[in-house]
Image (cartoon, rainbow, N blue to C red; front, side, top):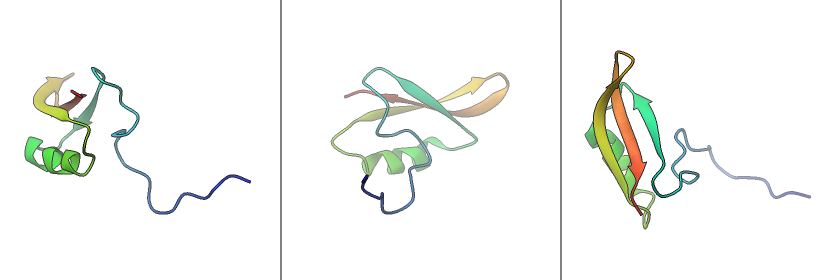
Length: 64
């Protein structure tokens, strides 16, 4: 029997991203994602505003 997960799953892949990998979040601001990243310590993330295919968003890269 597998244990049931309690609570809502994360919207973004904070816990599955390895060091050096990144993910793109369209339409968000850097400050709001940096606040979300604090909840996932001791992992560290770098947030950078970029444009991909005409869409502005934030690239979140795991640093350590």
